[in-house]
Amino acid sequence: MLELRNVNSGYGSIQALHDISFTINQGEIVTLIGANGAGKSTTLMTLCGDISIISGQIVFENEDISSLKPHEIMRKGIAISPEGRRVFPKLTVEENLMLGAYFTPEQEAAEMFEKVLELFPRLKERISQQGGTLSGGEQQMLAIGRALMAKPKLLLLDEPSLGLAPLIINLIFEVLADIRDQGTTVFLVEQNAHKALALADRGYVLENGRIVKEGRGKDLSSDPAVKEAYLGGH
Amino acid sequence: MQLLEQILNGITLGSIYALIAIGYTMVYGVIGMINFAHGEVYMVGAFVGLIVMTILSSIGASLVPVYLIAMLLIAILVSSVLGWSIERVAYRPLRGKHRLIPLISAIGMSFFLQNFMQLSQGPRPFAVKQLIPGSFTVSESFSISYMQILIPVVTLVFMVLFTYFISKTKLGVACRATEQDRRMANLLGINTDTIISVIFVIGASLAAVAGVLVSLYYGTVRDTMGFIIGIKAFTAAVLGGIGSIPGAMLGGFVLGFTESFASAYIGGDYKDIVSFVLLLLILLVLPSGLLGKAEIEKV
Image 1 (cartoon, rainbow over the protein chains, first blue to last red):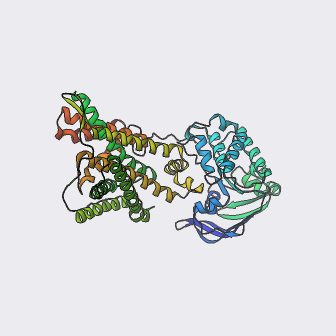
Image 2: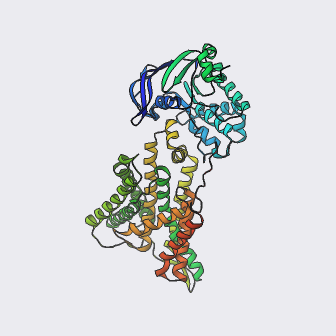
Image 3: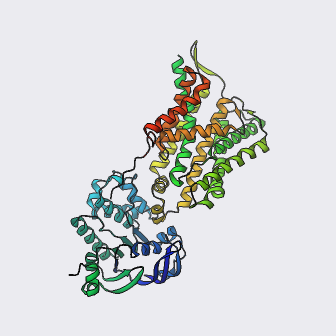
């Protein structure tokens, strides 16, 4: 479904990603784990066209999207819940959600709206509140919900567990499993390697802008080096 | 009676400032720059209104609503194209550069437009004939001219249309989203360059409405008319909290009332001093303006 081939990218003259190659297949949850600053968010932003690539190729559904602008890429069936959630602070929860469905036909958008509120009942209680007044966990739900509103084929998530209480993290990961079961492909970038690998079908490990390891989620979580570096050594 | 008269003057003046201030505040909100050419868009709107009026009277049109609607619509149309072009030519190529650079470009654009008008139309005032002469006589010492009623009514119509657009329509929500977080709007598939163009077109349209109304009210237009009113409307936008749309409306009326009361009770020469002193005071006490956003970010 999505393939990155030898992608190099960076900010200005500083190269952040080196020769990144990976694939995501239809219906999978694939995770990218790595330490702070390893280049996880950069990978996502490169994929979305927000950071232009120096060399390499990004192919989505047999189409080269490497040189497209972000808004062109995001209309192809890709949606993101980005780093820092980026909820629109002065729009209501409802407006935030409906913006996610900006290019979805009205009927489908209305159906998705119901579905998202079912998935996150908390958002229903807050429906006419401004995004900026929500708690961190609620904003995360809103960011994921907004991405789902586009009915994406591929859902990108940047650290959905960051800064959240364990209960909320569990809830969000349950929802992710649901989303995958309903046919959406998920690419999950996480620092919380333990959770991410438990959920994911496959995973990649990113270190200093390079992919250093890949494998099935289970295999990676029992890999001694991964355990040592990302799972607290247990 | 003088009090009532000044209230009316305040409403009239405030309507004009509010209409222009919206353009300043929206452009600032979305690309963080002061569009110094905005006053010139207003001036061009006034000239277009006069040209339409001249054409209509030369073909013998006589109905007042025909004049009014044609002048407003054509001025809006021409100013929209102008506003759109200004952004394309003078600002978009500079996006992502240091903030001072588009600001200088804006000042250049303002000079260009003003000088263009001076060269093409002549450096002198042009008379605009009274569209709706006459007034209500309330009492012997107090009457309200029809224009004083027309201005707030037309302003109200456009404010209602604009408020509906920005708060209820899909495109309006996208405009606000782009103002709040342009990158995220882009990541939702929204072409934010188009949205920025839309914002310039809306600002220019409202400025054109103000231009037509002012030319009818004062009965004159000229090449330099955009400068001082541009500064005033900008003041109104800052007063209300730059970036805030309700703030621009409120700031416009606060400024309008201040000026009309200052000129009545202190003296016409002092009205500008009083307005700018008010601006200074508000900025000292409330640096972000009356309705400016005090940003709260949750982690």
